[in-house]
Figure 1 (cartoon, rainbow, N blue to C red):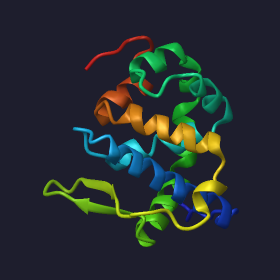
Figure 2 (figure 1 turned 180 degrees about the horizontal axis):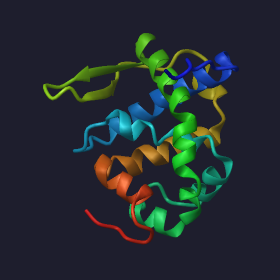
Figure 3 (figure 1 turned 180 degrees about the vertical axis):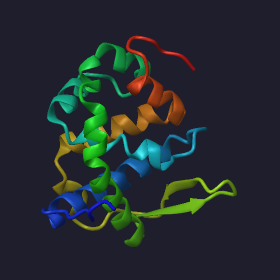
Figure 4 (figure 1 turned 30 degrees about the vertical axis):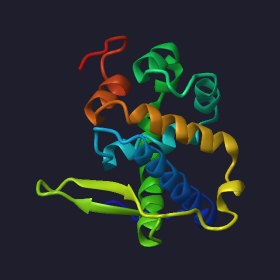
Length: 168
């Protein structure tokens, strides 16, 4: 049995993850994507947002660029991504748990048992949005825009598939 996840920086990392997840969900939803927002997609947010070299690489890109072009032009984003996703999964889940339990985002389960997420907040809690570092917020917004243009399967193929090969 796996050991329980303990966040040694409970206030900082979990609350930051909570608000980054809420921001991502709100921005994703504002794009009115044809692709529903699911947990596998959300697992790919913090590993890119919390990595400074990824934020710097993505900062120079236009948010309206196509995700395949962004990843093709920035292959360094994929370096150690699988390990980073594994390492950030507990923080992502804890952040989502805080966001759902505090009413910032909601989750619903469809008939196939797939969980989807949507925003519930009409406005941010006072003082929160300005206290989150702007580079984290910018990268979160960019990822929401890019992820909203592709299915979860396509994003996983682009990030973890055969190098330099892009298929639908």
